[in-house]
Length: 106
Image 1 (tube, rainbow, N blue to C red):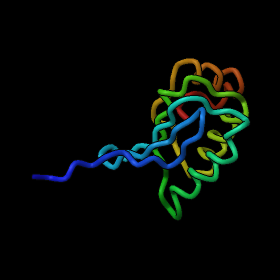
Image 2 (image 1 turned 90 degrees about the vertical axis):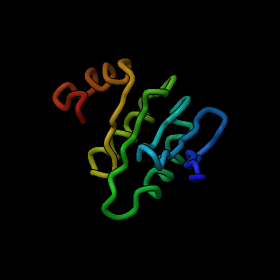
Image 3 (image 1 turned 60 degrees about the vertical axis):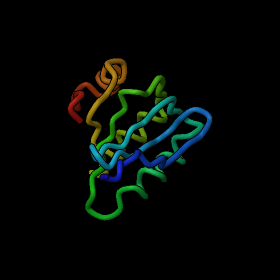
């Protein structure tokens, strides 16, 4: 019988859970990302991808993201540490409003 791979919890607080799925290679953000947890999330994500690895981040299950959280994610993308693979439409719209030249492709 083959061992089943389970998602690893990388971060957990009252508002947000970050998991890593070895099957898909995706980091999932689930819940609310805001100024209260953005610094800890940045540290967690930075530690999750040491060296040359680029994190694939799925944010489709984010119920809320404020400017601090969005700026942190965009900073990781611009640094080449991460890429946002799945985003909720409201997050794409916010990125378009804040940085129309960059666009949703990040």
